Length: 184
Image 1: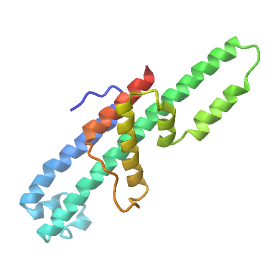
Image 2: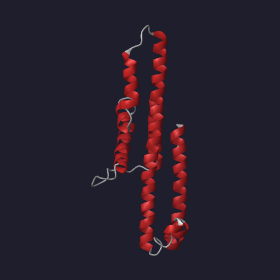
Image 3: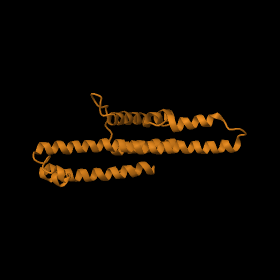
Image 4: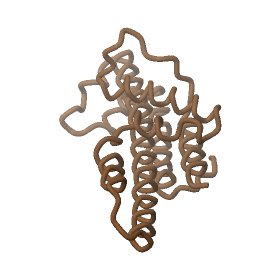
């Protein structure tokens, strides 16, 4: 297990690790006895996937893949939430300081508010904002995570998924590192 400092990412990471642990622990039993699958699925699905060993294995492989996909999307969602909270907070502090110090309000702040609250609302926007601010290796990993996340959330429309070799620990740690670097 890796150390995660951002609370939003940490909670999501812990939830996902717990689900992963449950799935891995129970799927070992299915590999030994296909009928064990009936203990895991809703009552309406009993005897549907457990009749043949190969069908049961395809079902648990599909479930495990869905868990990986869900983990990636959930961690990225937590990352987006953390980053947008940081940018909106920095905007609020900046606006308060200028409002107190400036003789006249400046249009810049209305523009910045639209920029933060309207235009930058996606992962690509976050990466655009932090490019050059964070470590190059972290940025490259973030871009790979973004490509794979886009592949998943856009229905896996491409003929082949992007090359992606990261586990849940690496994803969580990379996202946490990016949030930490932004916070400095």
